[in-house]
Structures are given as structure tokens and as C-alpha cells.
Amino acid sequence: MPVFKDLIDWHGCEAVQFDPLKLSGRATVGNTRMDADGVLINYESGMTPEEISEDFGIDLEATRAILAYALPRRLKKRA
Image (cartoon, one colour):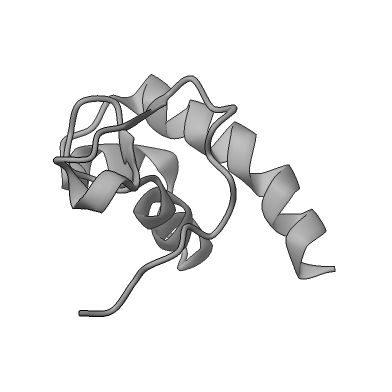
């Protein structure tokens, strides 16, 4: 079974939760099964925060909080 690693360290983001019973303990959006990396990947693929929230049934404010947390860290990691 492959081991997945989060794209960034989500431990400082208040919009995510870590539950060993969901997605093997990876960062999820609130109490959903949507992984935080998925929000970032979909945004980087061209979806708007509104589209992500609607398509995946997650709170728009949580989506925005995840992106606000992730984008500066993602840019640093790529450099």
C-alpha cells in the first residue's frame, strides 16, 4: 500500500483536522473526508474557492482558510 505524504505541513492550519480513522490520519477539511491537499491541488488546477466548496461540499470559509495558509508555504517549498 502506498504511503502518501502531505504537500505541506498542515499542523498550523485551524481549518484542518487530523484523525487516524480518516485518510490514515492525513489533514482533512474540518470533519469531512476531503483532504487538505485536494483543496490546494484543485485550486492550482484552476478551480476557484467557490467551485471547490460547491463541488466537494465543504465550507467556503474553510476553503479560503486552507488556501490562505497553504499558498505562501507552497511557494516557499517550490523555490
